[in-house]
Length: 181
Image (cartoon, rainbow, N blue to C red; front, side):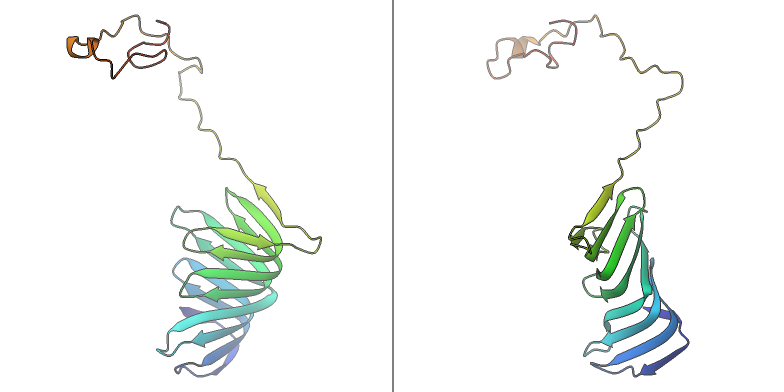
C-alpha cells in the first residue's frame, strides 16, 4: 500500500499502531485508489497494513476488477480491510460498477476481490439500485437476422443404435432435424 500524497502525517510504523495522514490523501494498492481528507492506517502485530479508514467530503474509492470493469464509490467514510479486500462505505454511500449498474444507501459493502456488494437503507429507508443490461452484440455484417433454412438431409440412426431402447429419438433432438418432424 502506497501513500502517494498527504499534506502531513503523524504516528509510527510499529506493531499494532496507527499512522494518520491529513489533507488531500491519496493511497494506492494495485489497481485500487482511495482518496479523502484524512486516512488512518492501522498496522497489525507484524507491521502489515490491517485496514485503512478514510474520511472526506466525500471519501472516494476506485478499482479495476479482474474483468476490466471500473468500480467507483464515495461516502462520508470508507473502511477498507486489507486482508479480506472488503470496503465498507458509510454515510450517503454510492457505488457504480461501469457497465453493470449502481447502488445508493446509507451503508454499502463492496468485495474488491469478487465485485459482490450488499447495502443497507438510506435516508428514505431504502437502498436504491440500477442494473444496466448487457448490450446485445451487433449482427454480423452481411447476415440477416433470419435463421438459415433447415438442412434437407435426414440423419439416419446407425445400425448399432437403431434397436437401442436407451436413446429414443425425440422431437427436436439431434436425430430429428428441425423441419423434419
